[in-house]
Amino acid sequence: MCRKMIANDKKYKIDFAPLQGYTDDIYRNTHNEYFGGISRYYTPFVRLDKHDVFRKKDLRDIEPSNNTACVIPQLIASKPDEFRKIVDLFVEKEYTAIDINMGCPYPPVAHQRKGAGILPYATDVITLLETINEYPSVRFSVKMRLGWDKPTDVFAFLPALNSLPFTQVTVHARVGRQQYKGEPDWEAFLQFYEQCTHPLFYNGDILTGQDINRVLSLASGLKGVAIGRGLLANPLLAAEYTAGTKLSLSEKRNLYCRFHESLFRQYKDRLNDDHQLLVKMKTIWEYFLPGTDRKHRKRIFKSSKISDYEQRVSELFNNSEEL
Image (cartoon, rainbow, N blue to C red; front, side, top):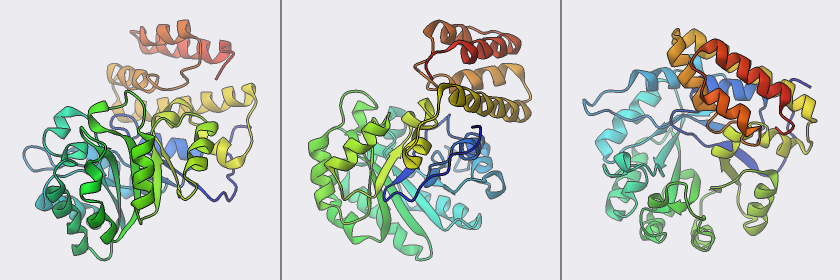
């Protein structure tokens, strides 16, 4: 079986959470083509740079003609004027659904009071979020963390959040300072879950179908989950969960091999430089198929030429007992 699995009509949805440097348009489109199982894909956040202009790679990534999957663009901003400029860009591109990033945990971003860095400043959060009222024809969602230092940060602006017309809220159940370390705070998340009036999605440390079931059993009122790193590691995760079936090792090997070949071919066409291509493909293996043979993975990362890389990837696919 080397085709996208057909999902059944499950009650819960699975969103593909964005990761900077990984889930670009090529990756999203290719994942959708080979695996599916995803309700919505999100772009990595679009921002204004220090010169108040957009990065070329962001413009390319959101260009509708470059996206064949169901994609929602995401923005990151700290002030309403900045917010408006990005929303205006999305509206110009004829997007009618937009996601707001208040979850990015990386210090260079957070120190600008963007992403999770804005969460301790409830007044700033409310001022920023209320800007959505200026765009009644756009459906807004928001992805956030519980706070920056404290998992109670969100409760200072939760009444305002509830009063605004968001279509969906996604919460990564950590604080920003944790980045991706330590355990998600289930107590704080469940408290938020009880008080949030919007459709709510859970995000954080979902690596298996069992993880999805555990989350949904603890909070049955959730509308679904958002998965980032877990889908980069196992691109079949959503498809197998929604279809309720598992592929054999040979079927997985064939599917993953063709998926990788398609990514390789498209990035080769776009980058047109062997060094850049090698760096890009190694980046994919930072998450991809972590259960495969450690020795083979190490050899992939040590590749200094494209020919070496291709040979070592082929060896991994042909010899791995676990995928």
